[in-house]
View (tube, rainbow, N blue to C red):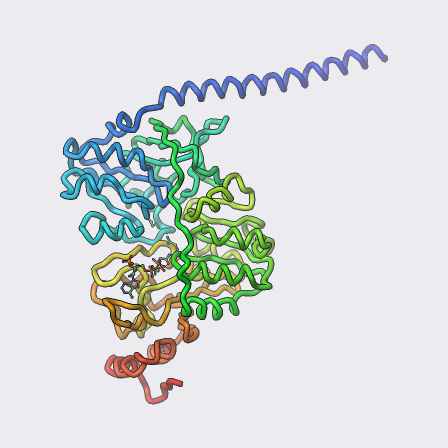
Length: 478
Ligand SMILES: CC(=O)SCCNC(=O)CCNC(=O)[C@H](O)C(C)(C)COP(=O)(O)OP(=O)(O)OC[C@H]1O[C@@H](n2cnc3c(N)ncnc32)[C@H](O)[C@@H]1OP(=O)(O)O
Ligand SMILES: CCCC(=O)O
């Protein structure tokens, strides 16, 4: 009996060792396999961009992940190719293809959301805007409603042992783009953080055609230090609207940093984040224990986002940090999904609003400033969340051409885009207060908005509202 037991034990041990050995050798062989595949696909940037032909559509990855080496290599092909359409999103460096080709003989450049660099190029006719709601972009690509790229140029981390490259700080619609691209070139940068994802945050080496390597720090977007009185007043109004357990989204611009700082110093607790953008201001909120995601209905304990832009501190903080989950933008920005978290707060900025509640957040006349991005997505999503509150914020005035100008206007400028139509206008906040426009008549909207305007402009706005037939004798201005 004892002998049989011993034989069975030895057999068991041998089996366990054999299984471990098989797994270990398979991993080692996979490693070698991927190393060979990596070497076979490795090119210089100049070699890789030779795949671009006249008439091609090229996609360059989003935000801080703009592929700088491939852009530089492609810019050297000016004159060699013609009618190449290059598309990116909010490039955090000025694309070299534009500087190299001011007459657009070879390249026409366009962006889904203009960065400061792209805004300047736009003024010179060297960058065009592609209108759209951010949430729709992956579906538009997959359905063929956006030009499928002939060549996708995507910056990533180096691969892991399983042969996966991570999309780093811009998951966005990198995966949808790669699915449709005829050729995929990865620009591998060992300074890109590995960002843990809910899904579609990585790509396998077997799906990739060429790899180029370049090491450089990601461009940084430091928080603005020019906090204004108006921003502080608006943040004080907003913080009263946030409760323990609220789920936050902050948009882009100066305002969100001010409110984030105020939350970090408040007594609020058990907050969550479900946002489009991750910024440096999240670090404090998480480290100070304000944000833990414990009250979220989906992605509990995770800070959810689709792209990150901030300081090096943010990029280091994101690296393999399990409290974050990046998702493609059709998931983060899907209004129905945003609404699944209760008490979703959406805080976004605007440029101008008219007396009907039409919100113009991305352009001024013919000047494209930025883009629609996720403003409509989050305004709608938060409005559908149980206890949710969407806000659109702005200082009541701005200096324009050396002159104090009201942001609350009788009608938005000719050619300015309406980002949020009046049908979804939510609560508007200026330093003079807040106005919940949902469900209000035209005359009530006009009254409420005029109360948020700078006092110097109120009389003229009332006259304009009368001329526009959106004023009644019952209207009052305190
Ligand atoms: C990527 C994303 O989608 S994030 C999610 C939310 N998305 C959005 O809300 C998209 C729309 N919103 C935005 O683009 C931004 O929040 C903005 C433009 C409204 C505000 O952003 P900020 O960075 O705070 O704007 P800022 O005050 O620096 O102005 C940016 C430019 O717009 C110009 N501008 C701002 N207001 C006006 C105005 N009333 N008239 C004319 N120009 C104006 C400024 O002059 C500046 O131009 P410059 O580059 O020549 O200096
Ligand atoms: C913010 C990006 C918008 C787009 O390209 O869809």
